[in-house]
Length: 394
Picture (cartoon, rainbow, N blue to C red):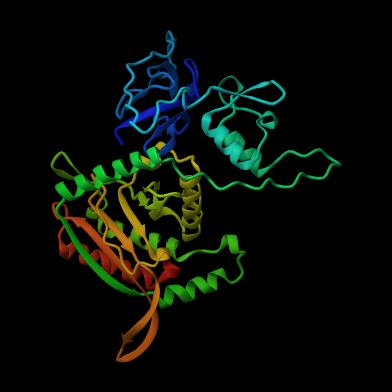
């Protein structure tokens, strides 16, 4: 992405924040994301006004450590960088976002654009939601809490859960912008990165038997899917082969200090996004399953955080559910590797001179030849296979 539009500020000058707090919502070619603060302190200045479209890398706010008083400043309106509308699409007469929502009773409710979008999709009346944002503004988290625990009056039957309408597919203009962003990224990757490709077939007989045993007493919503086990095997293999987990920047290889798996997720209506599961090697298979389910849900409904979009140290693409036997991916720069999994299918398998039928998956590796070579990559794939032979140890 090259530009972002600030659609909502969730803090104001003078507010105290801590690391990880969501301070703004920014819209890019791939949707609206929550921007997290990286350091604790007190907001001094919002340097980009709501509604402004600015290049990636622009300073959005300034803060101080709170030890000494500072004069706080109002947001500064920067020069707008706007894309000219296409000849077929007239320029919008109204701004894309509004600061408030007027209810049918004439009351005005302060809510962020993302909160309004989720409330509309879930059938939530914003007048019944308590806001925790600046000046009582309703945030995305406030709406989600209302969805999980709707308020009812004692003695009255609970209202039936509203039927959630499917998320509308992206507009043609939004999809065009997304495809353009993807095209630029992959074109740069193929132009600048000397890819090498490897593939290996892995017998998943033991993993399948272990999963069946684990899921016997679980509710359907709590079952572990093969994808979580495959992700954990990749994360643990990267501990042993860390050169595949990192970046190529400033003409040098920089191994990452943590293992944040970027998971390729297809979006409704088309498009692709690869947010990160942080510290995947430290999560249990159960925790990884929960993290994966949550990530897919938020990627498709809105609510990803900026750190999830920027912290991935390697990408994993699993097209097994789509029916592909294997996938040879294109590395996402500045990462140096991408792991792909195809469909798990029953195939003939010879073991110890005996022929049988086993569940088998093809795992592939696309890697940057500047950072590693085929010998190193082959050993990594072998390690993934060994780990999947002992799923109980993952």
